Length: 273
Image 1 (tube, one colour):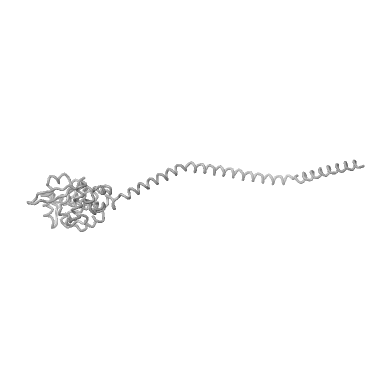
Image 2 (cartoon, rainbow, N blue to C red; image 1 turned 60 degrees about the vertical axis):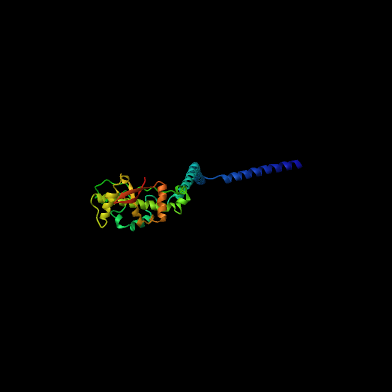
């Protein structure tokens, strides 16, 4: 009798298992309305996934573009660093003012210059003072040469010759000499056309026909009388001024010319190109 009971329990157990499976299947069954709701949810999830995939592709493309520009950015950074070194080197060797600008010392000297050199104000822009003194009818005169001294050039000069002079002081003197030379050129041009006026007309005529006619001063050369330096600011007729003039002659910026006029010798400094 034991065996039939065991077989019956096995049958009941199998039948109970089948009933449980049928119940699970019944729970999973849905009607048509519920199936439509599930379909909408699935479509929404699919659309979200596609949008994420598209955004992921855009992010990957952006990262690839940025990665490709890294070598270019590194090259630009290296070029900027090199340019910075060049600018620092240039800034360390420039004078206090650029050649195209008038220094403060020369501006002060121009304001305090005596009337004998005021026939026409020196023109930094290209010798327009001579043309204005001539009534605008003459050929435009080139500006006086301004060959400035660099720090390296000055350091190559013997210490006993340069004394305590600096490149800025020497360049200010060059600017002042050029301004005086342009004023002399304007004064001579006005005197030769009989356009010199004022109390210094006699001096202008004397300079034009006794000094400017010297062979070494012709050909549009720019020059300054030693007497013009009496009112100088950057270069004067003192010990420092004489040292400065000697240094400019040594560096090839000035040439000393002696002119005989009225039984006397007049010292003239010619500015060299």
